[in-house]
Length: 136
Image (cartoon, rainbow, N blue to C red; front, side, top):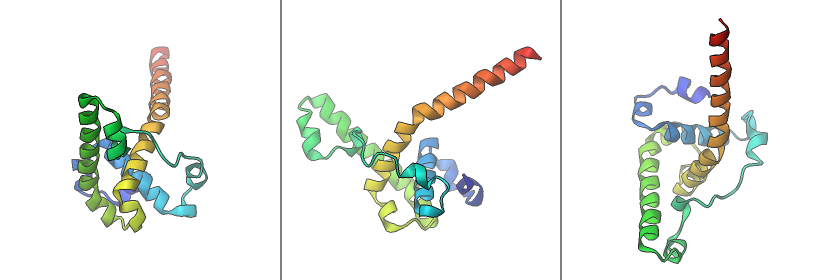
């Protein structure tokens, strides 16, 4: 995506790859119909059942102390990562609804949902690249 090329800011060096991917996703969504990925975005899930998306009611329904702690930790971690990326998102002038923690959680869930496909694509590229090296 052009985001990383157009906005090569020092803040990108402080973010984790998943944070950069999440910001890139929100940036593309912010473009609306101008994004070449817009038709794809229309088919994405509207919500995800990840621990970071759990509210107080869902967290307490877990009942087991360790599970409750894990859910609370996931929310804390997600908020921390959102706060770290917030400056970049503001610099990119994302629309206010895309700057919210709720939007961040959705984009994080989307990134996690896309990860198996992303990993599979890279794995396949690695296999074909390795085969090319062996042939030579």
